Image (cartoon, rainbow, N blue to C red):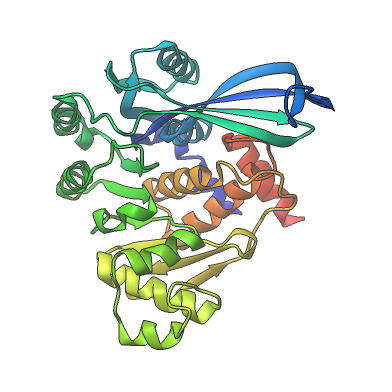
Length: 344
């Protein structure tokens, strides 16, 4: 516990840059007592409505709640949703100087209607067909040139909304390695080949399974282990083999695979895999658990923690988040309380 406390006490001294897809999450909560006469759908009587940061913005929210100094880099639309998101981020003490406005694309917005603690419907607003405005990538790269060296760590939060292209990821990774800055990735399945030579990636089990297929790993050992289930990792032995192959193929320092109720599996170059048991007591909503994992793990590494200790702390953070509704953040106080509770 003393080592954990020592790491957490250094959180407020760290400066982290989050680069990724910005999303505004809207929640409409209410109750259902009847079915609509117009169509066979429930009628939700609205009781309240609120907004929270989503996507990469929720990663920044987690880091801020943990006490770090955070700068967010991404793109929003020239619309009300973009203004709502920026206002909310500033309220949470997140530096928004890296956010650009693209008048040609809307701010990505996800509206969830919830009744009796159940999600009734989700409405997404986004435009994936319109390319980023001319000059946007150049401006983002210019920001990295000027500022990346000033941070203790960089997180790439990839939600597949168009910001993190192969070019931008490679640019950020090259600069981070040049300046010896920690760089971690919360990955998107389709983009695994982008993430070569980073400090760590944090895929879930499904993403890891898909990564084996998407980057076309053809290791005889892996093929023999998986057999006919060429993209399914069912046993610890199969997960270990896949983890080692991903480490080697992508030239990673480490790989942290999240396994839901089975906890996590940490892989480091030149070391045996480490199994981390789940810390969740009551699972209410898994939304946002990945954001908590990448935030706590990266911040702990920036404080000088070993990767096993950082992964264990990340596991505790994820356990806090899944006990809440929606994409919410874990705070430093909640992390400390959860650690104390785990000692009982």
